[in-house]
Length: 264
Ligand SMILES: C[S@@+](CC[C@H](N)C(=O)[O-])C[C@H]1O[C@@H](n2cnc3c(N)ncnc32)[C@H](O)[C@@H]1O
Image (cartoon, rainbow, N blue to C red; front, side, top):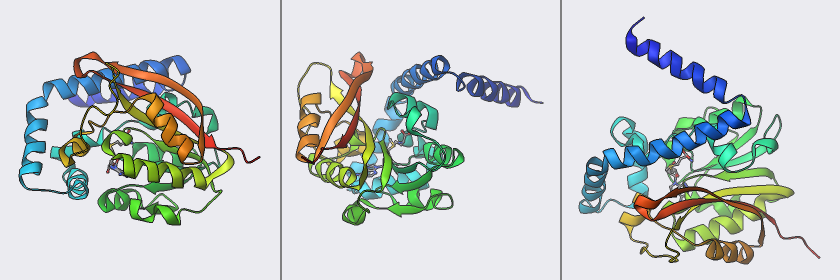
């Protein structure tokens, strides 16, 4: 066994052990946040160069995501690669997942969360801006959806919808539409669990919705703004918490759980 394969199998064993308990999952989660910010710091130059090249080539946001998914080796950083257990624990939905749960996974990235849900017996639909991303997980899901098909999502269907590290890549107009259609597609007791980025110094929408900012994931919103988006979309906020802070980027992440408004 080479030194590298030994280290890799040790890593897998440690991860599997940690994932068995809530304390372990929480530690793994904190590690992901740390690793994400470290990786961003170490490779700022490369990431910046990739974005600048995309902007110079007038690549659309959709083309950019297709490239990130197709050229995984070089652009894979942008897909994050969060594991299912990290996503579910951050979004407070672990207890809702099990055999037969119907889930809409939004923004599939490397596919780890989607495949994890399927392994646990969930009936999974996937929504992504990139047809390349959807093709990669099409072997294991029930249906795939593009943002242009949001209107066709079936009503009253999902026990759970998940969006992790996606809202910060979306314009207000697109996020408003997504929340409205996803809330409509939830069962009466279903939950839409969403992460979004906020600005630590309290400014709301401090960054313009340029293609560069959407690609980079720099769109930040206050909890108040997201609350009013939810209400206007026919939803209600049932839970929220801060899950991370990055003082070096003047940014942090919130997680929220949304349900349909109760009809009177
Ligand atoms: C940063 S990755 C996050 C992946 C994964 N959820 C995770 O936490 O590791 C963003 C994902 O969202 C997708 N995405 C970007 N904009 C989107 C949009 N407007 N609607 C749906 N998916 C989008 C990208 O193609 C990519 O798969």
